[in-house]
Structure formats: structure tokens, C-alpha cells
Amino acid sequence: MTEFGRQLRKFRQQCNDPLSPHGKLTQEKFGELLGEALGIRYSGAAVSDWERGVSKIHADQRQVLISILKVLAQRGGIKTVMEANQLLEAGNYRALNTKEVQQIFPNVSNDLNIKHSIPKQKISKSFVPFLLADLFHMSEDELQGLLAKAEKGPPPAWPRILAAFMRKAFDHLSFSTVIWIWLWLIAWWLVTPSWRRLFENRDVALIAIGMYVGGSLGIPLLIGLLVNTKDNDYWKGQTEANSFLVRLYTYQGAGIGFNLGYFLIFPLSLARHYLNLESAAWVTILVATLGLILGNMSARVVPYNLWVAYGRLRFSDGAIFFVVALLGPMWGLFFLEYYSIFQSPVWGTLVILLAVTLAAMITTRQSNKKLYTEQ
Image (cartoon, rainbow, N blue to C red):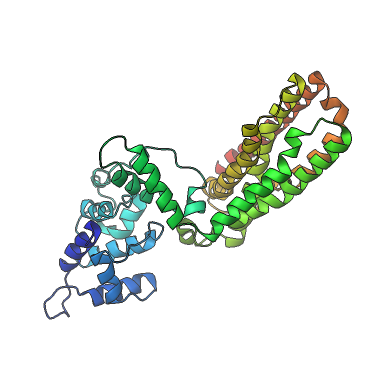
């Protein structure tokens, strides 16, 4: 039996059930109440498996955990936020936030002392890659639990941490992992020629830019497909958010991030050309990787930021940024038209500075629009 299972059984047995012969909440009845809260039937056997540690609730199933705590609170099994967090901590789940506390303990949600019952979130001891959740389906809570277990033992701890992480990664190896690997290979094939061979001659530049344009149109769409908003607990809870617009802004964010990654690298390509430097292997890897990382990040951030900024999702609020879909083709035409200018260090640098200025003006305009709307 796991610590979480022991705690769950203890709190369930503290619950009251007037219809039970012993006055205690049975596993079967607990499953029924949980099913009523979630709309999904849970048997007494499922509850028994949780308590015995036979099965584990995934950290991504946050609503299941919240519903368990809600049933326990309603039946008197847990009486305080501290006890609720005690159960979560036993399973290496993150503590309740204020909104979740209000769902479970509505009568004490305005208590001035409630903040003292919510522990501060643990700061991650290591950098969690942006692609971790998509590649290995591993949440921050699971990672913290993995690190805590691996650190037990004689120093140094890093061999156990690495071995545990690799084991967990292979356990969660999924089809989406393979798709991300294929996507990286596609990005490397399509994008890196515009870094390595862009200034050999105009014919080579035409092929390299053509490959980049194809990548700028297709890769963000694939990133958007891999960013699952349909099953995301946060967007499930935002019933007023239009699911179509959430998806649309997810694709927009993927395009913004991917192109941003490329244009962060392009000035380095110019500098390499001007200084007659060789192309290093690690730089070509960075070219392919940075666009995917920023695309994945922006695909998640853009719809959320618009939702928070305007309190809604409308096409008009972020319509100006849909021009990003044409950014690749427009850049390709511009580069080929003024190819000779980019061959000159002075004019090439000037064009880059003008592009940065234009991007800053567009961003400022959008920020001012948001400020005006909030007023």
C-alpha cells in the first residue's frame, strides 16, 4: 500500500454515511459519489485499487483528484485545507491553489487565514524542458516525485536521477514522441539549408529559401496539432471559451514561435557569412530545435494570454497576428528580390534593424490596443 493509498483510506473511513450499517463510507458508495461529481462511474474495485496502490491517478487527471477531495470534504472525511494538501502531498501531487480551495471548501473560501493553509509551490530543482509533457507525458509533479526518490542513497545522486528519468521516459514513450522526432527531422531538413548554404549563390539560395517557406507553412500546423487543447483541464473549465478559436490561436501561436525562432537565428547566419565562419554542427541543431521549442511554447501561451487580457476569445482581438501565416512566403520573396543587398554587410545589417523596428511597432500597437480595451 502506498502512502497516498493509506491516507485516502484513512480519510474515507472518517466520512459519514447515514445509510451504511456501520455509518462509514464504503468504497462502493465512495465510487458512486465520485461518479456523480465527474459524470463517470467508478466502482468500489477502482477505489480499492487506489487505496492498495495497485493503480495510480495520473497527475494530469487533476479534476479526479479535486473531486475526490470534494467528496471527502462533503462527507466530513477531511475538514481543512491542510488535510487536503496532506493527501495530495502523499501522492506527490501539487498543492491546491486558491480556485481549487474554493471548489472544495466553499464555506471557508473567504477566510483570511486560508492563504496560510496553502503551502508555497515547490521550486523545481532542475530545468523542465518545454517539450517534456508532450514527449513523455510527465508532469512537473511526477518529475518532483521521481527526483525525490532518486536522490535517496549514497552520493552522487545524478546516476540514479538519470537512470530514473530514462526509465520513466521509456515507460511513457508514446506515438506523439515519435511524431515529435519526425517533426524535428523535417525541421532540420527544411530549415537548416537556409543557414548553411544561403549565400553560396542565387540558385542555391532559391532552393534553400523555398524549403524554408514550405517549412514555415507546414511545421506550425503540425506543432498546433500536437498541442492538445481539447483534453486540457484548464480549457475544459473555461466553458465560455470558443473551442474553435482556442484551436485557431493555438495554430497562430505555433506560427509566431516557429518564425521567431528562425529570425533569432538568421542574424547569426548573416554574421557567419560576413565573417567567413564555418557552420558548426551544434548551430544547425539549434536552428532546427529552437523553432520547435518556441512554437510549442507560443502555441500554449498565445490563446491563454488573449483570454486573460480580454476576458474572452474573439477573432478581432488577435487578428493582426494571423499575418504570421504569410510571413515565410513574404520573407522568401523579399530575400530573393534583394539578395544582393544581403551580400553587403552594411545594407544587410540595416535591413535587419529595420525589420526589428517594424516588429516592435506592431507589438506596441497591439499592446496599446489591449490597454485601451481594458480601460
